[in-house]
Length: 89
Image 1 (cartoon, rainbow, N blue to C red):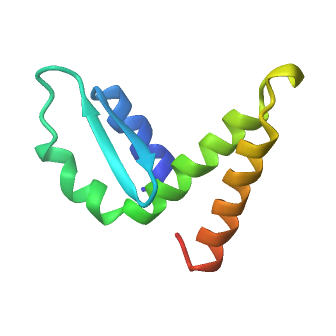
Image 2 (cartoon, rainbow, N blue to C red):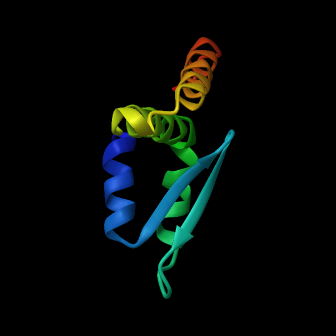
């Protein structure tokens, strides 16, 4: 299963992941159990981190020109390249 497909599945179940450095933060809708998903989240952590970083880069790049934050975009790209060079997913 791809990280993208897993994120879609989690979102449809009411579970949302965000990236904080090398950690995943999990937020679930009230009443939603994480238990059925935790093993897959742990098993796919590197791929999920990379997918979330890629989504953040696209998000940063697809704004109106006046809202484009060049330093943030450059920071994300440096992070991407460092992650990729270190053998990230």
